[in-house]
Amino acid sequence: MKTVRGDTVIVRKNTPLRCTEGAHVFPGDMIRTQAGASAGVILLDGTRLAVGENSEVVIQGYMFDPPANKYSLIVNIVRGICVYVSGKMGRLAPKAVEIQTPTGVLGTRGTALAVKVESEWP
Amino acid sequence: MKYWLTVICLVALASCGAKRIPAPPPLPAPPAPPRGLVVLLPEEGGRTGVVTVSNRAGAVEMTVGNTRVALVDANTAPSAPAPIEPAEIRRIFGAALDALPPPELVFNLYFRLGTTALSAESEAALPALLQAVQDRKSTLLTVTGHTDSTGTSRESNYRLGLDRANAVAQRLRAIGVDPLSLLVRSHGQDEPLVATPPNTDEPRNRRVEVIVR
Image (cartoon, rainbow over all chains, first blue to last red; front, side, top):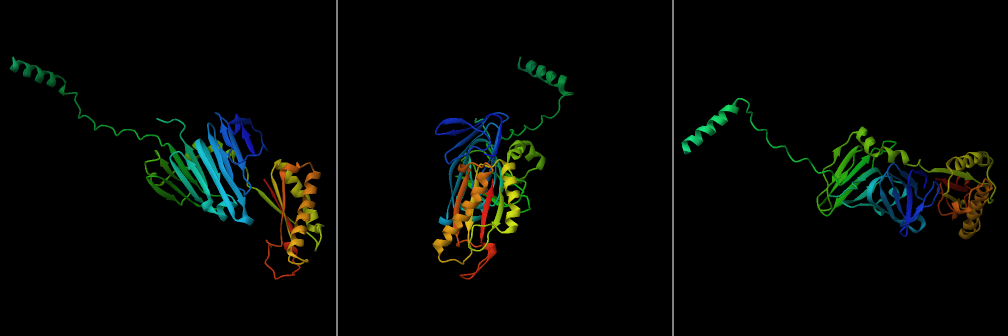
């Protein structure tokens, strides 16, 4: 976790943990931000994620093991805003990267993208 | 009686006839706000990748930066890609873009043949690495040792690579880096920077790669 602004928590096993810059994020963790808050994360392969305010983003799965040729990154944007900038995984195994949203799934090849998922549902 | 009603109606119509204008066609219903918005950002360096947006109803592909696709729900196909103004991207995503960490930094330190002693150049370059670690308050560093193809065996080169990585890790701990922040490992002779035949003295392959996040 490289940048933390405002009321940001890591939800690990249903428990919200106060988070500070330098905190480690693990597969299964949800990053939850309140109004005016944001968070920035860099993963082992250099993939970068930023989460905007009023958001819930889950790092659902992560595996980066080039010697074993094992790659996986699954990000679930439950609501709010998330920016993704690909790292080595995006170059070595683009198919292993999956970004899920409530209305569709995103596949990427070496990309920077920004996603907004409306928080209010009809 | 019917006659009179008709007359009254006609008079009523006539009395306001001057002000009547043709009724405007009904406005189309305002489009529902998209439940999902996906924007392909132009990448630094000009290389923009590809993103496919798909759900049960269809799939679309974006290949050009500053393009967006809207999603209504999981059973409605994603919209066709359309351009989006950088100012609009900034308005929606500015705060998140500002929270994006800088890219990782990669340092290569080189070693003398068969040893864990840094070359003179890399010894001189070490302070820049240590400074970057401190500037970034990095809590996740990867320290990977490599060797050239000299040495007695693949296994001994694995160990030499690990010893080199540990030697660099020691320098990082000495400036206060938490050992738990360090991922120390060896790839031995298996990932040369420069491909060589066996038993080749190649200084560029005798290295430790440090990734600072």
